[in-house]
Image 1 (spheres, rainbow, N blue to C red):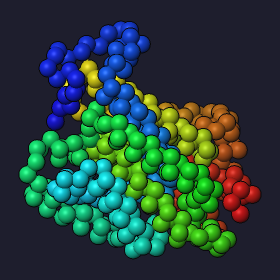
Image 2: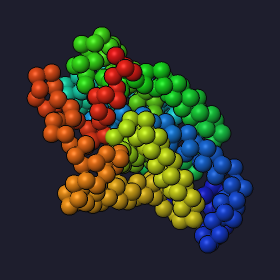
Image 3: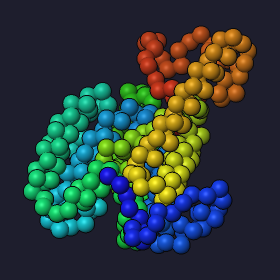
Length: 341
């Protein structure tokens, strides 16, 4: 699939020059590019912010499932002649509620997620077979078409983004605590079940909007990869979230900028940039570990020396003293106590 620039389809393809500022000014003369950057900015911010918790809670599979549910909803909306964006929002919202109701805990939610995924794929297949419109409409659902968003789509994205950020800010500390240690959070009286359900509903909203940028098949490019990079670079929750948002913004802006000059899918550019940054983060992490082994007193990524960073006890031990695996970006217990207790 290729993305043709709406206002330039009948003229020569624009050429990239060494003057990037002039190139940016040139492309912003077109309303569809202004809409693309506006929608991309909104979606990158909310995807980066919520993606941090997706990685922290190990719910990448759930985000992929919600994307497929959104595909079924968009195909069904196109079938009945409704804006596919509304179908995306409706189906992902219902799918998120269904997964939250069927699965109690993160480790037990995979079965519920798989069941919902199978139903969503079956519905999507049915709707696509019944749909007799242009094939490009179905392709845009799968691979995204941010260069074709309208002012109405931008307004919808802005409303969803504002709602998501306000809701996430209101449950930031309890959600962080429940994401790091669900059993301890529940023992301290936090409404873990409702937090999980609310998070899935927010995730459904974000997926419905992010699909418009990278499509169903490349949802990880914005929702998972920036957060995965951020958690490789820092262990502090606030810093990791802001870094994930910054990375999502960078790959989105750069991808839209490059896609203006080359007739290739935007999702390819965004995914490739995100993957390249992830490889650099992994290489940097390996190099830092090698230096740490060669020089035990060298500072770690958060400014601690090797001795201080590894006191000899597991960083995330259970109530009985048995260590259990924690995400690489999980903050120390002292960083949370006093804020969520």
